[in-house]
Image (cartoon, rainbow, N blue to C red; front, side, top):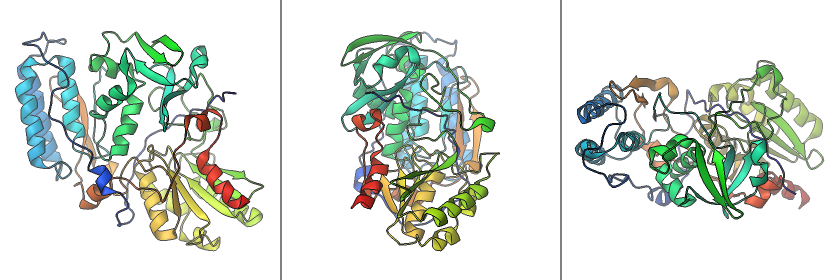
Length: 446
């Protein structure tokens, strides 16, 4: 029987400090990431501008972007090299007169995200907020609909084959081009998130309208409207369940996101403790993070679990210093968890910024066993306090750039790779099975 999944609002906050130093990634895998300089589609001569901007105005915006990037950033080309960036820049400058406005914006985004800094971004203030009324995620056996607004609940569990006649894997690979390139996992995660936003289908000319997209599953074609829907978390009512029909408007990460910023769960007759963090920040006004840490510590004393799992899946980041105050070295030492084989930390591709930092720190400092999937970003990523938002003069496109230099450590360690890889299958998720938690529970049963 299909299980309706819970989806929560995940605020992708970011970080203010760094943790440790050793590389934990398979660099050979990361080298698969290539920067392309080709246009996204065949172009036609002198297309009419959709918003009245001339090619010269777009070129002026491009020059402004390069100027602002180089003026504000202390080293924006460490990831791809200045020569590669200049090739992309010059090619776009030459192509602008023959591109449509949508193609121009797409190529601008490609250029921005090639920087490979997790906190760089680009947005269009005129970008629509319409989303598909379904939630798609990738598994070992393909792309599946894992949640939907109530009117489309019958689609939950269906495997997605194509959207508007284009195979879904092709769409994802194209959307990766305008997703953050801090790591190949962040690229894929960002591309899957864009599957839900009608704006990007129109930007790539997959559709002429934002009103409707046709999703083809194993059961056939379904015309899905794009719509705006918002579910805002109320800190005074953290226990309100985020059920089907309450998908979020922007951040569609939350397969494992808790309906609270942090909480504890007990399994296997209290022999397994799972401490879930949707954020690494002190965000619950009714339960300060330090107080939560004290409660967890008292319950460990009370129940004496065999294993403790810190679950950082779908964790967008936050402030590591706040988390470390509540769960300091003394906490782990008090409960004999350091280098004990009893402490686990879980991540997936939606673990970013402070989530990746905390994972790396727990592995290197406390000997935690890392389980799950690679983190989306590097534990040595830049910090949000170093960023500034800019706006291009003519198009109004906004972008965020960091003044912090992309470090060698960040390049060498674009993700934290788990010691025990556990990849969920569609049947697991749709039947309410958490393979990561089950892995730890099975250790008890041994």
